[in-house]
Figure (spheres, rainbow, N blue to C red):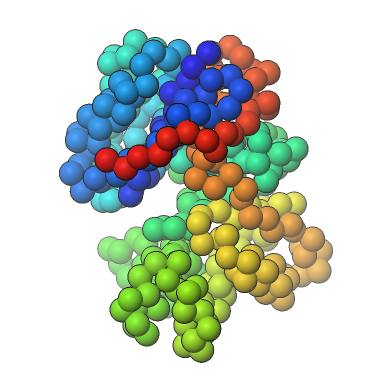
Length: 311
């Protein structure tokens, strides 16, 4: 069995083949998101045609996904025109095989559950921190997508109502303060060259930079406090490249317990373990299950070998 899997983000598209034992033929491409949704879909077709024959397609993608129809029911302006795009219909017509489409954070959460940091767990929350803040709710081993497929949109938690402005639905919200974009915005006021998480932590020894990072970690904690009280989860997974920084993962649980009652303090905060292959793993597992192989996803493993290109 061959499943062609793509993970579409605002910056990059990751792709690979699940061959029954792991992910192989891994590649990475620029999304060219500013060119719009129609151009993106042509790019997706081009990438898939490069993999030859396969039995199904799995698409992990930015945006809220109607998993019944495989279409994008909402996406922000990072990919112009993406809202309403019938992704599954387009790909099934082009390739004549089953296509499965899911939100990228939901797919990543499933990947972590099948073969990553959440293996063996059936109830947990997953958050990713990058350009924005994404989230997923897993209960009884299943994604809880919500009435309009927007469940887990934790970036919309209102943490600073004093900054909320009518007409700007994200003003005052978690994403504006806890995303890596928010951290970069803070550090660029110190040094314009601090425009990525990597560069920020290279300069972490500077007092002003460390102070900015500490303030940003506090913002992360404020949102997590709300989630702990609402869901009372046993585990919360935190993903995104910046979460590989040990200082962040050490500080978050230490600060979180200071803001919650004793009965809520046993929540386990873990870093996601699959990195940028989590979405590919999760969507491959979903596609595998839809093809009638429900016993396979739990055995899914990820091979990090394979070609990587950017085009």
